Image: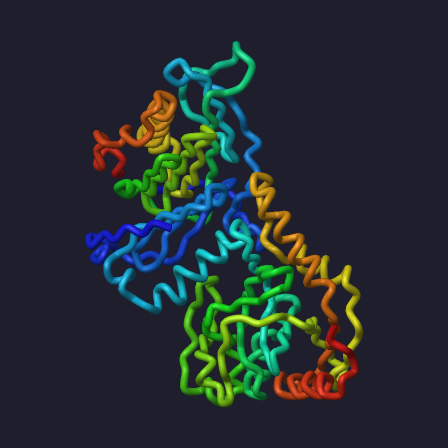
Length: 273
Length: 152
């Protein structure tokens, strides 16, 4: 990765994030005024940044590193998948589900119950000595404006437009009482979240092939040039789909659902391999 | 400047727009070399001599995508060059990438870049990139390039 610092960009017009790609090449503008290119085949990144951005810790933490891992990750054996990850007692817990189903609010509620947060929106998977490892980037939890009804702490905050254009609260996990943050964990179980109008929380075993299909279908499309990256991703998804997993159908709010998950784990209605 | 009407592309699994179809294809002669062009917008076919007589591989391929969601006009170009790549950004209105080894050039052209601007400013720019990469001097090609010449 090569970073070029250009002080003339300090006074350049600010731009929103904007990325485009073709085949193995990806490039784009990185707010406030940087420009970056990724060569996914040669595993090479080149960026021009303003002095201000290069010296700004939050720019690296919330923009440059997450975007770079998101774009380049699969080419360097780190696979980004759309799910949250938490950990308690050394056991990683993944929360998957369709967009808008409430993964982030459930994640926030679980952190309040003592689960350490690894990641909220995107989790980055790698294999270390044949074991799956889930990594997070210490990014803030992104909660949609209606989450204020479940978390009083949000009243002190103002929602902002996030990178994907959504209006959301970006909450430092430390703001939620009881929250701790970890960098990585070994995933042991997966809960696939579904909403229902039926009161209560119901757990149903989730077949590996359905889980595999979900992750395959919800992952970014990769061009044919990136054969190795496609293979790595399929391997990781196959490994993930062998973990014990359940659909949790909930008609309850996030706190009650989090409590039900804890109860389900506590009662040991399953065994971790 | 009036924006061209062009359909917006939306695929939540293709945020980088790598899979936009480019069904319009033609081959041209650029300085004696055969260049294939494919695009999703016929107004992005360059006004260059067509090469209909020969078959076989092209020396270089251009993939030009009309990007309906990229507003704005051309800005002075910003270059990022390495031994294997040349990338040029003229604001979000025009992003170009050229792989020196695979001889593939791709570009995203914004909705506000009309056909005249494309033919008058961008086609000569693309030809110059093409000639230089084919002559084995892809990086040096921009040394003499005037920023003003691509500024509309």
